[in-house]
Image (tube, rainbow, N blue to C red; front, side):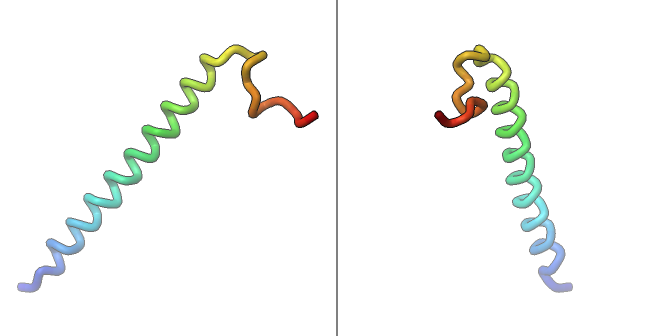
Length: 48
């Protein structure tokens, strides 16, 4: 038996962990952006 199974498992776990962390960061950012008052949302305002 080769070590291909271990290789695939290792890569799968690593990719899944990175994707889960990216999802968590995006969800956290969205929830925090809702807490900012409307007049303080500079990224939503047009450039003058």
